[in-house]
Length: 216
View (cartoon, helix red, strand yellow):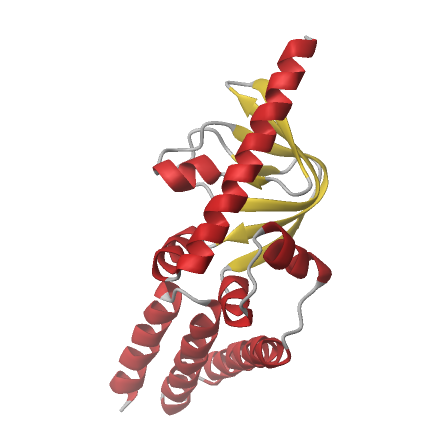
């Protein structure tokens, strides 16, 4: 019995790491914790059982928060701005799908959002703050509120063409790029909305870079 619960724990843990959506990651992690708790309890390893129980409680709490937000449709102001104004996603179901692919982070001045040459750099949306874009150590542009970063790598699959460093305390949304690609291909509304938003952001950055070049 102990071997079965151990195998189940490992299988569910691996599945949680491979899950495309945040909801399924929480569900599978909760199942893995339950299996781990059973395994360590049967093995009379009380410390490990307690730790597995705590981890399971945290996973359950996070899952309940996620489900509550899905039912109530509650979104923060920055999430609403990104989904409704920047991406122009109208379908509540598709909004919830995208929310499951986003991780919000607060970044301090000097922190790197991505490094030149980085493989599979994240797709980042800058909700607040500012960042410097540099190529081979030389500043080539700036990014501000409403800009996307890493869009060219997402489209081409190439490494990051520039380094991006926060110059003013920022609030950013990082997308799960692999899951985003899958969802964009499966749901036309999301794919078209994403393409439109990334194109607008890219055009805006090119215009700013050209204006800066003419002033030099």
